[in-house]
Amino acid sequence: MIADFKLNTQLAQDSIELMDLPLCKLLLVNDANFLWFILVPRVADIEEIFQLEWQAQQQLLNEPKPIWVQSCIMFHSVLIGLK
Image 1: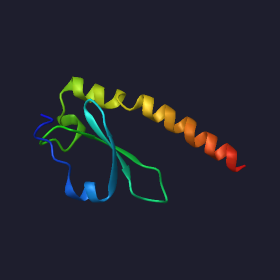
Image 2 (image 1 turned 90 degrees about the vertical axis):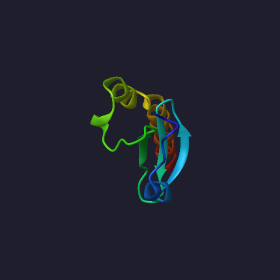
Image 3 (image 1 turned 30 degrees about the vertical axis):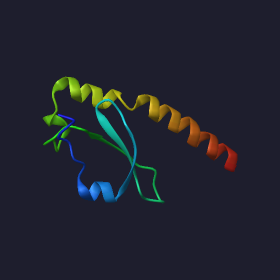
Image 4 (image 1 turned 90 degrees about the horizontal axis):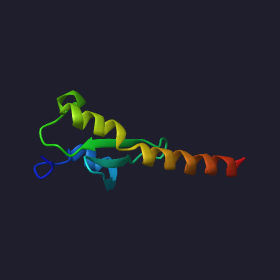
């Protein structure tokens, strides 16, 4: 499963790998205009979420919650500091 995973070449070129979560690789899109995160399940031969097992779909949806909360707090603090 994870051992056979290979990140898409174009996605690897257009993003920065931030960390590996239990199921997913967390990427930051290399775009100065937008803060875009991408979660890529480290599962071979999967292109769409519906191809994952039900349990993996649920994990995919829940895995990033602590990261999103921290990101929102951090960027909200930055925005307040700019006022």
